[in-house]
Image 1 (tube, rainbow, N blue to C red):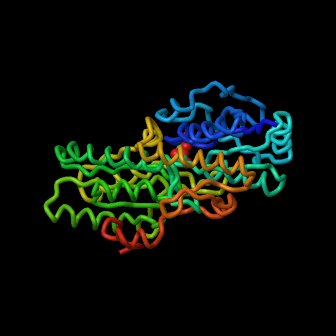
Image 2: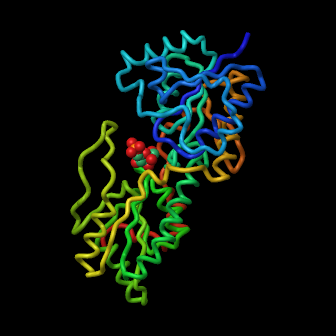
Image 3: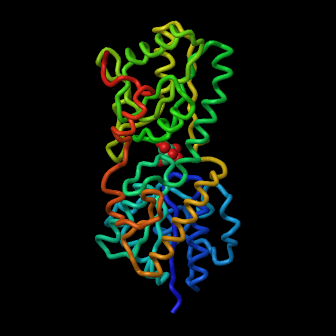
Length: 350
Ligand code: F6P
């Protein structure tokens, strides 16, 4: 009997999603399995909205950014009593032998719970530009986002130099500083601020003073959107939290630019890179990485190894329990922060 496999892409899109579908689709087609696409992540499962992808030319998907299946923040555990039965009914209606969920902590967290609590035969593929999933060295989309942020900082140097300005560049990553740290180090930013270390205005100004005293007429500060900012021991960042209990993110670059301009009398501007970091074609690395993850996920399906996720460990494509990937958020390690210590601002108040 033909193996029937559902696939969905959930959460914020990331360059490489289509390449992952390509790897999955090609391997499944070779094995005569049938692939059924669900539209807009969990929304497609909740509302039984499918995409006929049987005739897609999977090879052509490789280069496309975004996700041709569509994505959304729909999440079956937002209202489990009502929503989970709908997902289970869709699985039954389509006689799915497996469901491949491509996503980050929200999408894969739901997939893991469906596996643990209802024995849904799920396989996961990790994606997020934030790189904050555990049990994998990297997630695809991350290096594409880093490239966008790095090039933006490189380019900003000329205008910052012309106007003798400080440019504060806000990168995505929610509560993890991976994009900011990699791009900031690569672009030689004069200061990097990440959520893993609270930022203190006093320390930032002292760093910029040193830079100015060293003869520089401009500076680039890379800041992660989730960084919490303090001044005179008081937190200046918003105290509102989202539905997951996390602090709301965003607006930190403008706050820092205003403080720098006022305190140092050094003209400062802010730039939020925003969704550009998720936009466009994936880097070659992300295409190949996602393709390999997709192929591994197909193998897991065909071997009936459910509740597992394709991953990269020590550069090799492996598979790991899905539960390991979603147990804790992967943030910048102290080893990383120590290695690049000179780029980051000192911890705590001065
Ligand atoms: O999780 C990926 C991410 O790009 C975060 O870095 C960012 O905070 C968020 O998504 C933005 O999401 P939205 O598409 O809802 O604006």
